[in-house]
Amino acid sequence: MCGIVGFTGQRAASGILLAGLRKLEYRGYDSAGIALDAGNGGSLSVLRRPGQIAFLEDAMDLPDSNMPQSATCGIGHTRWATHGPPTEQNAHPHTSQNGLFAIVHNGIIENYAQIRSILSAKGYVFRSDTDSEVIAHLIEDAYKGDFEEAVSMMLEQVQGTYGILALSSLHPGTLIAVRKGSPITVGICRNETLIASDVSAIIGHTDQVIFLDDDDILVATPEDFHITAWKTGPVSRPTTTVDWEPGAIEKGGHPHFMLKEIYEQPEAIENTLRGRLIEADGTSKLAGMQMDARELANIDRFCIAACGTSYYAGLVGKLYLEAFADLPVDVQQAAEFRDRNPIIQRNTCMLAISQSGETADTLAALREAARKGATTLGICNVVGSTIAREAGRGVYLHAGPEIGVASTKAFSCQVTVLAMLAILLGRGRRLGREAGQTMVKQLADLPDICRRVIDASDTIRRVAARYTEMHSCFYLGRGYMFPVALEGALKLKEISYIHAEGYHAAELKHGPIALLDKSVPVVALAPDTPGVEKTLANMQECRARSAPVLAVVTAGRRHGADCADDWIEIPPCPAFLTPIPATIAMQLLAYHIADLRGCPIDKPRNLAKSVTVE
Ligand code: F6R
Picture (cartoon, rainbow, N blue to C red):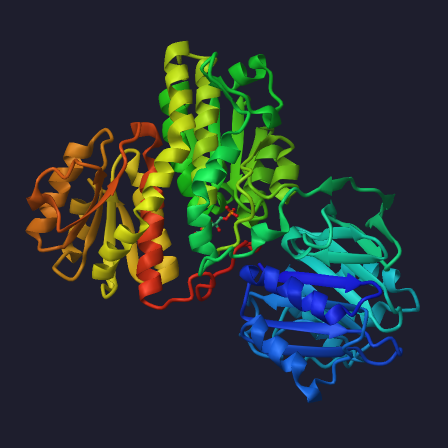
């Protein structure tokens, strides 16, 4: 959830760290801080501020900041609060009692209360409410002249999840990083090393990175680094080339990352499809699955685990796999998957869907399924992410970096991958060649359909302007439109702070209809898909209760003026692909409502991009 970055080299570290934190701010933005080593063996210099990175940058510029601006080694952190409110004293870095060690931490130390009382009894004084501060004191307590040894001994004491970066003025130019459950990436440059919780802070400096594995300890100096598997010995980890353009993580002239990423969807889907459709055979090729025809034929059930928007993509995937591949599919919210005792049979294939590839609940579900013997596949966007690596095989989205906290292009690309997967599996079962060819052609046309939805952005903004004052609303859909209703409501609530509920159109009358009146609008997802006539009847039920209805329909198919008060039209589209353009329209609706309300769209309160705590 938090973002961490470290630098050791020949150049001034502060600017590099602040620029890195800016790139990571989407991961958490409650407070931020940096620690620098002036190289004189004395106390480390630490500056922290509640709120955005900009406040930290302003504080750095003040003449009385007392920060050694020419220091060439330091660590930084942007926080998403778990233990203790977002205040200066809870912001990272945390220093040890003697001020000679500083750490930044992403994750949760589960036994911190117990460690705190042991250290307090030894005379250590705690200055924050965080679980993280114990790490700095434990390192000081264990230190006998060997920094790496002290970090290793600290690891003996802590339980939980962590990505940690540690700095000590007793070892100038040295950074130590450890990971367990929270990602750490190392950027390899000439005469300098960058370490960060994700590649966004590294690209621009180098495209050569190494992803640490759990229990790895990295010791880095400007010239060199080595990795030790904790309690095992030296290891080498493969170097990966990251193909993201540095400009891909800039806003490119758009007011928000979210809008940029909504607009990028046609191209992102093209990238997801590239080289994967085989029109002649009416099928797809998903090389990353590394499964031959026999293995594919042996799968007799799917189990999908994911969170939030990725979970809703999974709900669409269930419809695809059932309809086109005749396979039973169980889709579960990842946390629920783990907490229950999921049934994994011999030929069950577990699909973990995650944009970031780091979501803690999804990772835990994947591990549980693997432990029970399931074949595991990941559908991830971030290359080299933990879920992608642990699943061992799967399909990358190739959607490019998604920085906006509200997920947009990942959803479209996840659904696109799931459609290709269903076609591939279907072709090994009862989906005929001609039907497959038709679907493959329809998929190839999808980016253009999405472009036409985006072209209607201004029209959707005009409709949005009529819904900025509402306090609560419902999104209704059935069949392919049910997951879209859930996702539409999620987008609206997270960025506009308007209460929104996604409901199956048929379920409304089983309770929530009691809430409808003229102040509670209904967004009815009624494009041409199976079951739309019934949704039209549900819209009438809403209007009969005076609820304003905003209908999302296929262009030219308004079904009579008495059905709705407002309309959003999406281009004609094969029914199975309609979730994608319909969702893009819902992303735009949410975006424009939030923008007209003046909300901080890329940094909605209380949210973080990557949820690495359970
Ligand atoms: C909503 C949103 C979240 C994520 C969820 C899973 O806009 O972004 O609901 O979809 O936290 O994240 P990933 O896909 O990274 O596992």
